Structures are given as structure tokens and as C-alpha cells.
Length: 251
Image (cartoon, rainbow, N blue to C red):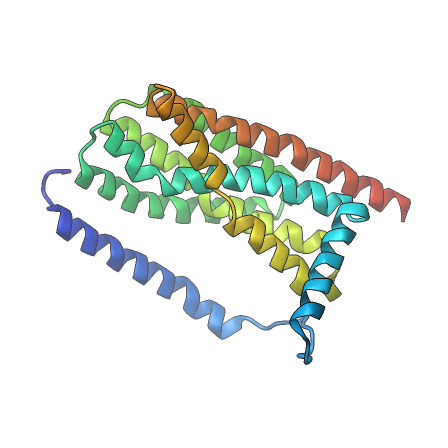
């Protein structure tokens, strides 16, 4: 099947499926979404803006320890997630796998990701958000270790599907948990910092991949090293959750 479609055709199919997917999930959001908390627009200088940002950072560092530990955890494990997603094709290419086959399996992974999101959405009604995020982290940790056995296109498919099972869920669950532990009146500032941690991620993981390769290691070893990010993210998330429990017990 991997040899049926040419590379240009597979790319067109990939872009088309991606566009249709985003259209499908965006239309319901535009129809039903209603913003509940917001800050009124005010005239503000650049200096005041930065003062508020640094004030929020200071508050997180000195007072909101639960938020601090979560952001550390989030930065670590989302760095690993971003690195794997950004380097999927590079991993397959490094192993001399068929490019068209990789694209086909990555397209199929989107279906797996959709199913995984539905499963976790159902589980969220029975289990806490933290537990589900921890499950996703363990899942990614296992995927990284599985990369040590990665040799064939079939192995690549298993790895891609493993990533798909947790890809959308870990991102949505993280945002959901974060919204619960931050003050609603300052959600804009807090989510601004959250987005910085999110969009600033994956550079450490990419640096690890490059370092391992430059040191003479294989791509399998490089991906396996990303497991450290998920292990540390697991630990810091547990600390954040414990801090949250302590805060609730004091109320």
C-alpha cells in the first residue's frame, strides 16, 4: 500500500485531511463557545504590561507553588511531546523507511488521536484530570522506550499510533487542569505564561536528539533519551498535585 501513492499525491492528501479536520472541530466551537471570564480593555503602556507580566511571574514563583511546579512539569513533558511530533518524519527518514508509508501511517494516526481523545473524554467523567495526565505521560514514556526496537515501517506505525493515543488528550487535559488551579480574574496573564511554556517547548528535546546523534548514537537511542523528560514531568506533576491538595486542606 505504501508504494501506491506518489509523494506529491500523499502530501496533497495530508494537507487536505488536516484542513478538513480543523474545519470539523472548529465549526462546533464557533457555534457554542461563550467566554465567561474576561478583562476589560484598558489603555496601557508597554512598561505597565511588562510590570504586570513580571508581577505575575513573581506571584507564581513565591506564592502559587502549585502553578510553578505544574508549569515546570508541563514544560518538561510537553517538550518531549513536541519533539516527537516535530521529528516523526526525521526519525523514519533516518531509518531509511519509505516516505509515502510514513505519511500514510501518520494520516491514520490522526484517526487514532481522535479515538484516543474520545476515550479520555469519557474517562475524565470518572477519574481526576491529574491521574489522566499521568497516564498520558506514562504512555509517552513507554513510546520513547519502544523506540529502541524501531527498525521497520510496521514498528514506525506502532510508535505513531502510540503517540496518537495520547497526543490530543495530554494537551487538552493539561489546559483543563491549569485553568482549575489559576485565579479566574487573572486567567489572561496566567494563560499567556502557559502559552510561552507551550510554544517555547521542544527545543530541549531537539537539542538532545542532535547531541546523541553527534555523539555517534542512533536515532533509536536519541528518542529513548526523551523518556527522561516524561519521567521528570511525572515527578513534578505529582509535586504540583500534592501542593494543590495541601492548599485545599488548609481552606
